[in-house]
Image (tube, rainbow, N blue to C red; front, side, top):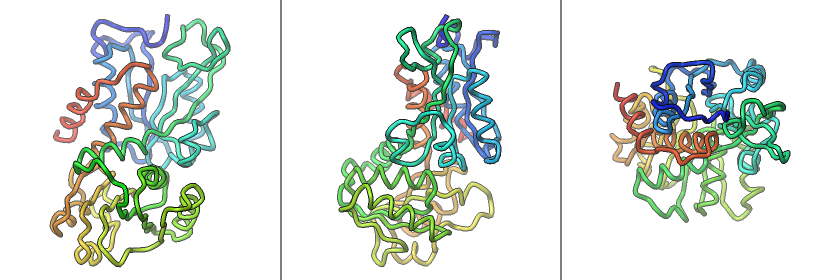
Length: 313
C-alpha cells in the first residue's frame, strides 16, 4: 500500500496505524501558520497524513532530520534558522538548493524496483528499505510569485532592490531575483562579513549584476526584509527609519506574516510605500512542498483560505 493512500475524509478521518507524518522544524516555531495551511491541503487531497510543527534547536537539527527519516516521515519544511544548516545535513540536494545555498523542504525518498529514488508517498509500505533525505528550495520561486501577485508587478527587470539580511532566505531571494534580471541589489546585514560573502556569491553566479553593500543613496523599487526582526513584539526595526522616511522606496515586502502588519510594514505604509507581508510567499512555497511530497497538484486556493483564516484568528 503506498504512503499517499487516499481516505474518504482526508485529514478529518481518525488517526490510525497507517497515518503518516510531515511537519515543519523551526526555532521559534509557535508563530507558524504552516500546519493550518498544509493540513487543509492534505485534507483536500484526501491523504491519510498529518502535518505538525516542531520546535527544534539548531544544535539538534541533524538529529531531528535523521529521526524523521528513521520514522519514515513523508517530508519536512524548514524555517528560521535552519535553511543554511540543512544543506550540509541532507543526503542529497537539488540544483536550486545548491545554487541558493539553502534548504527549506525535505522529501524523504526510497528506491523503486528499478533502483531510482522516489518519494516515500509513492512507494509501497512493504517496499521501503533504504531511505534518504533530499533537500529542495521552494523559497525563491515563491517570493517572486508573491511579489508579482501582491504588487501587480509582472516585470521586475531593471529594478533596484534592497535586501535586509544575509541568511538562507535572503540568499534565495537575491539569487532568484537575479534570474528576473533586476538591475541592482543592495545588501544590509547586522554582520558585515556575511553580507560580503553573499555579495561575492551573487557576483560569482551573476557577474553582470550590480551588487552593493549598504544603503543606496536614492530610492529603490523594492525593500525585502529577510531577517527575523519583527516576529517578536519590541523587536527593533530591521531598517534605518530615517532612510525609510526620506527615501520612501516604492514597495516594502516583509517575509514575516505574523503579525500581519509588522512594525516595518507600518512604518513603510506611514511613509507612503506600498506594502505586503510574507503570507503569499508562505503559500506558494508550501504548495510546492506539498506537490513535491505527494506528486499531486496542490489545492492552492483551499490552502490560501486556511492561511487567511489562521492569521485572522
